Amino acid sequence: MGKITILDLQRMKDERKKITMLTAYDCPTAKILDSCGVDIILVGDSVGNVILGEDNTLPVSVEDMIHHTKAVTRGSKDSLVVIDMPFMSYQISTEDAKRNAGRMIKESGAEAVKLEGGTNMEDTIKAITDIDIPVMAHIGLTPQSVHRMGGYRVQGKEDKQREKLMEDALAVERAGAFSVVLEVIPSKLAREITEKLKIPTIGIGAGVDCDGQVLVINDLLGLSGEFRPKFVKKYVHMEELVSKAVKEYISEVRAETFPGEEHSFQ
Image (tube, rainbow, N blue to C red):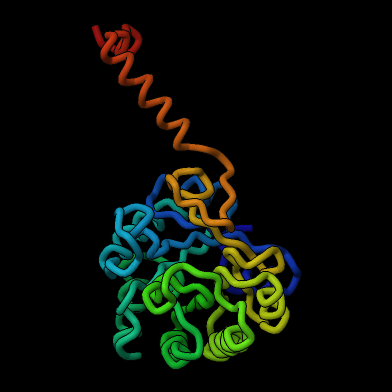
């Protein structure tokens, strides 16, 4: 198919072809995802808790995001690369948001930015898209709002919340977002939003009826320790495999069976 663009994603929604998105934070992982044909690689601010050991995404900086995204873009040839705008890089003013979005695209090599928020970010999304930077929106459970939400909870269970999320979805589309992530919301509501919007929806914990799906690569690979949210499917248990290999290495080094002759120079 060649290099994926935002026009391809819109075509996929129109043709009812599912969109695939996965996170990556480094070049080797990006190469694998790209070679497998993943449509979108997201460099998420989840790098904070997944890779950097933070409790949440809030400490992540613009510099952190650029650093990891540069590595990903070096490893990606065909996938569309999206960079997350971290906490406080777009909330202060539209001028700040434009400046940071421009810098992140210019320095990282990504093709689009992602930011969290609905009606409250409509003007910001419009300001960024007006300077020709594609924006992926993100509503529902928005990790940068973890303190306001009182933790990582399902959003949209109550009538008032459902109405607000529909308003948010329509607002980001109106503002010019090319797609929107729906995180941890009831599947029926996700289906209603997907049917209502012209732009693609990407679900995570939002049911099967979204136009596409996203997972954090470490969750998919079984590298997330005890973090096991309901919406995650582990396709392989890498922690067990890695632990087994490391223990074998330690054992062989101590027993002086590694390195052997085949690993040594004469």
